[in-house]
Image 1 (cartoon, rainbow, N blue to C red):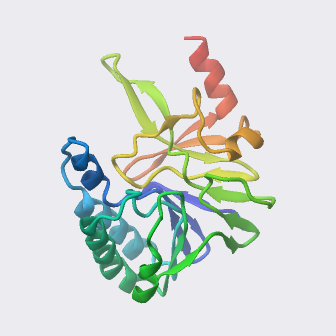
Image 2 (cartoon, rainbow, N blue to C red; image 1 turned 60 degrees about the vertical axis):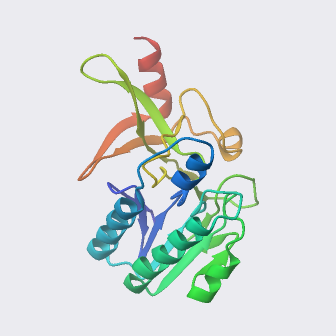
Image 3 (spheres, helix red, strand yellow; image 1 turned 90 degrees about the horizontal axis):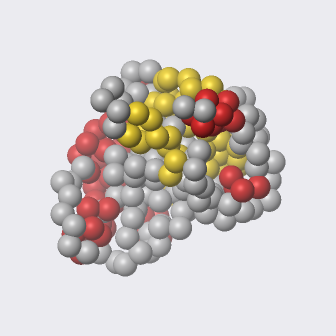
Length: 226
């Protein structure tokens, strides 16, 4: 079964919806460092609830980094609880594949969240992507993949992308604050160092559609010649 990317930065595989890198509590962490950002929790949950109501999956899988802070923070804990209370009733199962930011979250089991390190689904292995594991075909997050493009006035803008390969699919970050790593210039996940993604297609998710930018290698060559 081939996963289907959706404009809402999600992947659908049968009756399962997969997202990654919500980084709930990011604003709290930044405030602790003296950077004050508007709270986007309601926006993130609202977008996700709209997706769930439209696609009607039985299972929601968060492929890592549901939360952001490595340091316990009560306000982040409250956001996590509110997230589960808002989203949980819309699916039969809520599964978290642990990412490197998902420390101190075992208490979510009390709210009915299944917490795993990896999840097998229709011949694909879902892991967060911050460390290599054995397997053949993977769906990962962690990378926050993006590309840089120039807008109509010549300014550089970063846009999130799906990387859709035959053996590796990389999800864009669901968080609006995760601007991402330009996969044409830099990579973070060890999976992208091991798997050849030059033939992977880059899909840019917009509100209602996906823009196909072709193969990674072709786009890199075109942009390099400009």
